[in-house]
Image: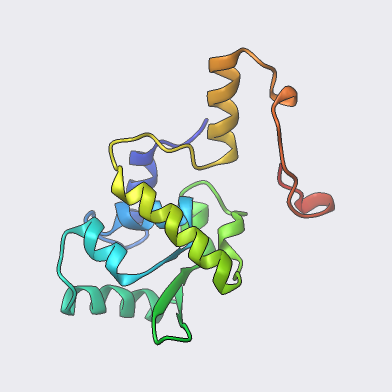
Length: 157
Protein backbone atom coordinates (compact mmCIF):
# COMPACT_ATOMS: atom_id res chain seq x y z
CA UNK A 1 0.00 0.00 0.00
CA UNK A 2 1.30 3.44 -0.93
CA UNK A 3 1.40 6.01 1.85
CA UNK A 4 -0.80 9.06 1.45
CA UNK A 5 0.50 12.58 1.94
CA UNK A 6 -1.38 12.77 5.25
CA UNK A 7 0.23 9.52 6.47
CA UNK A 8 3.63 10.92 5.55
CA UNK A 9 2.98 14.21 7.32
CA UNK A 10 1.88 12.34 10.46
CA UNK A 11 5.01 10.17 10.30
CA UNK A 12 7.21 13.27 10.17
CA UNK A 13 5.27 14.78 13.09
CA UNK A 14 5.86 11.52 14.99
CA UNK A 15 9.58 12.00 14.27
CA UNK A 16 9.54 15.18 16.33
CA UNK A 17 8.57 17.95 13.91
CA UNK A 18 5.60 20.25 14.26
CA UNK A 19 2.43 19.92 12.20
CA UNK A 20 3.39 23.27 10.65
CA UNK A 21 6.85 22.12 9.52
CA UNK A 22 6.04 18.54 8.54
CA UNK A 23 4.25 19.26 5.21
CA UNK A 24 7.25 21.28 4.02
CA UNK A 25 9.64 18.51 5.00
CA UNK A 26 7.51 15.90 3.21
CA UNK A 27 7.59 18.00 0.03
CA UNK A 28 11.38 18.32 0.28
CA UNK A 29 11.88 14.62 0.99
CA UNK A 30 9.66 13.47 -1.87
CA UNK A 31 10.54 15.93 -4.60
CA UNK A 32 14.05 17.28 -4.18
CA UNK A 33 16.06 16.33 -1.10
CA UNK A 34 17.33 19.92 -1.08
CA UNK A 35 15.76 23.24 -0.20
CA UNK A 36 16.55 26.88 0.43
CA UNK A 37 15.23 29.12 3.20
CA UNK A 38 12.96 31.17 0.91
CA UNK A 39 11.09 27.97 0.00
CA UNK A 40 10.53 27.21 3.67
CA UNK A 41 9.26 30.74 4.31
CA UNK A 42 6.87 30.58 1.36
CA UNK A 43 5.47 27.14 2.29
CA UNK A 44 5.09 27.82 6.01
CA UNK A 45 3.93 31.41 5.56
CA UNK A 46 6.58 33.24 7.56
CA UNK A 47 8.97 36.06 6.80
CA UNK A 48 12.70 35.55 6.75
CA UNK A 49 14.05 35.80 10.24
CA UNK A 50 14.15 34.04 13.56
CA UNK A 51 11.66 31.25 12.75
CA UNK A 52 13.51 30.33 9.55
CA UNK A 53 16.92 30.37 11.26
CA UNK A 54 15.63 28.28 14.17
CA UNK A 55 14.12 25.68 11.84
CA UNK A 56 17.26 25.17 9.79
CA UNK A 57 19.51 25.27 12.85
CA UNK A 58 17.39 22.49 14.33
CA UNK A 59 17.68 20.42 11.15
CA UNK A 60 21.47 20.75 11.29
CA UNK A 61 21.71 20.10 15.03
CA UNK A 62 19.66 16.89 14.72
CA UNK A 63 21.78 15.68 11.80
CA UNK A 64 18.76 15.76 9.51
CA UNK A 65 20.25 18.19 7.00
CA UNK A 66 23.60 19.51 5.90
CA UNK A 67 24.16 23.13 4.97
CA UNK A 68 26.11 23.97 1.82
CA UNK A 69 27.25 27.47 0.95
CA UNK A 70 27.33 28.14 -2.77
CA UNK A 71 29.90 30.26 -4.58
CA UNK A 72 27.79 33.40 -4.15
CA UNK A 73 27.15 32.90 -0.45
CA UNK A 74 23.79 31.31 -1.11
CA UNK A 75 22.79 28.46 1.17
CA UNK A 76 21.31 25.12 0.15
CA UNK A 77 20.21 22.53 2.71
CA UNK A 78 20.41 18.85 1.83
CA UNK A 79 17.90 16.83 3.86
CA UNK A 80 19.39 13.33 4.04
CA UNK A 81 18.35 11.69 7.32
CA UNK A 82 17.51 8.05 6.65
CA UNK A 83 15.00 7.80 9.51
CA UNK A 84 12.88 10.57 7.95
CA UNK A 85 12.97 8.91 4.55
CA UNK A 86 12.06 5.60 6.20
CA UNK A 87 9.17 7.32 8.00
CA UNK A 88 7.66 8.47 4.70
CA UNK A 89 8.10 5.05 3.12
CA UNK A 90 11.13 5.91 0.95
CA UNK A 91 14.23 4.64 2.84
CA UNK A 92 16.31 4.19 -0.32
CA UNK A 93 15.39 7.48 -1.99
CA UNK A 94 18.04 8.80 -4.36
CA UNK A 95 17.47 12.23 -2.81
CA UNK A 96 19.44 11.13 0.27
CA UNK A 97 22.68 11.17 -1.71
CA UNK A 98 24.67 14.39 -2.17
CA UNK A 99 24.56 15.88 -5.66
CA UNK A 100 26.50 18.43 -7.67
CA UNK A 101 25.37 22.05 -7.51
CA UNK A 102 23.84 21.93 -11.01
CA UNK A 103 21.64 18.94 -10.07
CA UNK A 104 20.71 20.58 -6.75
CA UNK A 105 19.54 23.65 -8.67
CA UNK A 106 17.39 21.46 -10.94
CA UNK A 107 15.84 19.88 -7.85
CA UNK A 108 15.20 23.30 -6.29
CA UNK A 109 13.32 24.31 -9.44
CA UNK A 110 11.17 21.17 -9.19
CA UNK A 111 10.47 21.94 -5.55
CA UNK A 112 9.50 25.51 -6.52
CA UNK A 113 6.92 24.04 -8.90
CA UNK A 114 5.54 21.70 -6.26
CA UNK A 115 5.32 24.49 -3.69
CA UNK A 116 3.68 26.86 -6.20
CA UNK A 117 0.82 24.42 -6.87
CA UNK A 118 -0.03 22.74 -3.55
CA UNK A 119 -3.52 21.77 -4.70
CA UNK A 120 -2.15 19.47 -7.42
CA UNK A 121 -1.54 15.82 -6.67
CA UNK A 122 2.13 15.30 -7.51
CA UNK A 123 3.33 11.81 -8.39
CA UNK A 124 6.53 11.67 -6.40
CA UNK A 125 7.50 8.03 -6.00
CA UNK A 126 8.00 5.24 -8.50
CA UNK A 127 5.15 3.32 -6.87
CA UNK A 128 2.76 6.27 -7.26
CA UNK A 129 3.72 6.75 -10.90
CA UNK A 130 3.36 3.05 -11.70
CA UNK A 131 -0.02 2.81 -9.97
CA UNK A 132 -1.33 5.92 -11.70
CA UNK A 133 -0.26 4.94 -15.22
CA UNK A 134 -1.28 1.30 -14.99
CA UNK A 135 -4.72 2.31 -13.72
CA UNK A 136 -5.32 5.15 -16.18
CA UNK A 137 -3.85 3.56 -19.31
CA UNK A 138 -4.53 -0.12 -18.71
CA UNK A 139 -0.90 -0.93 -19.55
CA UNK A 140 0.94 -3.57 -17.58
CA UNK A 141 3.68 -2.26 -15.27
CA UNK A 142 6.41 -3.92 -17.35
CA UNK A 143 5.19 -2.06 -20.47
CA UNK A 144 5.82 1.36 -18.90
CA UNK A 145 9.03 3.29 -19.64
CA UNK A 146 11.56 3.01 -16.84
CA UNK A 147 15.00 3.97 -15.65
CA UNK A 148 17.28 1.86 -13.48
CA UNK A 149 19.35 3.36 -10.69
CA UNK A 150 22.00 1.40 -8.83
CA UNK A 151 23.39 -2.07 -9.32
CA UNK A 152 22.58 -5.59 -8.17
CA UNK A 153 20.49 -5.75 -4.99
CA UNK A 154 20.31 -1.97 -4.68
CA UNK A 155 18.77 -1.45 -8.14
CA UNK A 156 15.73 0.80 -8.16
CA UNK A 157 13.52 0.88 -11.23
